[in-house]
Image (cartoon, rainbow over all chains, first blue to last red; front, side, top):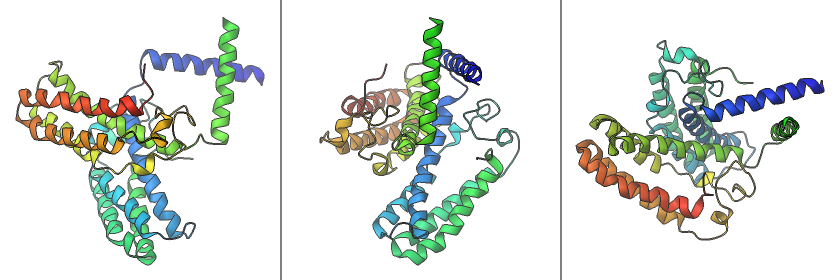
Length: 154
Length: 154
């Protein structure tokens, strides 16, 4: 068992060394897109916690989170989704390779997110009921893209 | 020497184990803000390569990069810069601890970036000379914040 760990550790070092000598493909693009996704997740988390009653409804905080989602949807991320930057070429990526070889309707799915985020923006500051009602379509719009484009997460 | 590497490797494993058992403080906020910074760096890189003559000037690509910088400046990132998320608490962060304890004028420095990005947006598509002229203030606005707020990078 100990031998296994040492072997694994040496493999880790070898990999790390290789990564610094020659950076994994599109590491920056992957870091940027994952950071933007985490930004969205954090803000959806603020809204979701209120919707589930885990956190008391706060109009100002809800509005701020919804505004952040809308702003994030206005970022042009096309330069980050470069052929050769999928999970097949770089295991740090969770993007399926077919994103770059098939028409998965990603553009329409991104537009769905923007529509749902704008609906949340219109509702979030106006009360918990409106926030809850906007939560379903928003979550669905995230899932719509993740289902076709993202390697399933544990 | 070999012993050193094995020791280092085991330490790496121990650290990784600890990190998964209990996530480092504000890991998501740090990932989001670094991702957004990398997004900016990639787009500044497009403009910088043209300014330096490493890549041929392309009005459309320059405009796209400048637009991306302006959009990134419209993201509210205040929820990502949380007290307790500096390099002192989480070595993954490059944010100096004094960002959360002193008034470093970060708000004004962020506004400088937005102003410089908007000037680049107005100039980038109109020719290489304008792009070059807008490059200096843009780089200076990045540096203005990095100097006071970021741990020096190698």
